[in-house]
Image (cartoon, rainbow, N blue to C red; front, side, top):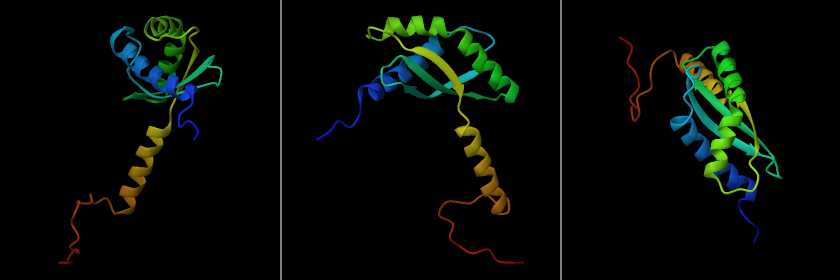
Length: 131
């Protein structure tokens, strides 16, 4: 029986948890907004990490600025990550904005408009009566 999760997936999962803790406790940059670590993808040799983030309450320029700041301070984040993870080599960190949250919100708004703008009540199966 094969392994369910490869080493890179296990390390990526642990790295995501540690990065979230580092962003919460150690990064004190006033240029950053509320940043959430959504996903970490590691290369097979664990040399490069793609970190997908979401920034809440920011326009497109703000999102791009936050990603730029994260990439600028990535050496500090990498150093903090090295202290917390027991790996011989720590991956090179590259931050990217994750559009999936924005896409999901857009789809939800479109579905809401298709329903006529009426919020659907859970468990309300009674048909509406025209007055």
